[in-house]
Image 1 (cartoon, rainbow, N blue to C red):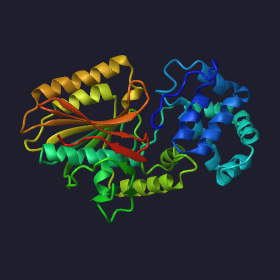
Image 2 (image 1 turned 30 degrees about the vertical axis):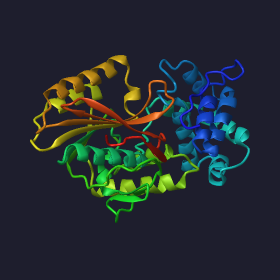
Image 3 (image 1 turned 90 degrees about the vertical axis):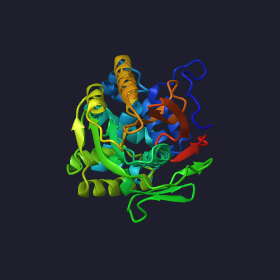
Length: 354
């Protein structure tokens, strides 16, 4: 079942956050990462610092993607090659998970715990297919270039979305000559394929990653699931494009950057477009309120010559599905365009264009 909510307990017993995420990951098509997480849960007793960090986590472990942080920490260790047994497990995608994962957790407990304190930096390029489809839908609403701004932009790879090639249900979009090809499994109707025009791009992140920094690029690679080689190759190509065409990503807090960006002068005939994908889940209640207030105030000032659009690719409040939504102003109408795989592997398109 796509997007089925995970149970808090199994047989009345809490399986733990790593084991719960293992079930979700297996459903999403990654048996290797599921096995890593399940073994990690069973072997937590061998890594007391990591276990304490998870047990004492002050916020929602699902919203903060704690299991994905753990998975990426182990993947980074495997990629580094210092733990030969771990590296071999990741190379073969099979083996004695409990023995190898347990030993790695024991040896690198402090390193894993420290890695997990930092929010994920996935910058998943696969999500750009959904965003591109939303931008084409937006172009049907406002036939003008867009001023693209991204919240939680990481290394800014998704700001280069017009430099990628897309196959949207058999329909080609973007730059067909690009070395980055995004082709999700498509279900439902396809939006009207039309070229988009990006007038300018800019993003913000608490800790932007520098695409010229080898360590930063390696961190991004660690967040790719080890049994998804195509995703890793696509990321490598997106990093190459970003080094040639580096988007501007400011260091800052979304709740302060967004109001400033929304009140900046806007060129007539350009649609100001704010995009966020898997970014708002890291905000607390006051942060969410600040974001919604900024959109409401800016929307009230929008007009036909200077429209505003918001494209969101985020979990629902119940975390049972990822919705792609488009809100436009001055009308203030929100359209649920699609339900999507968290990393963009498939898109169920709902919008009828009505």
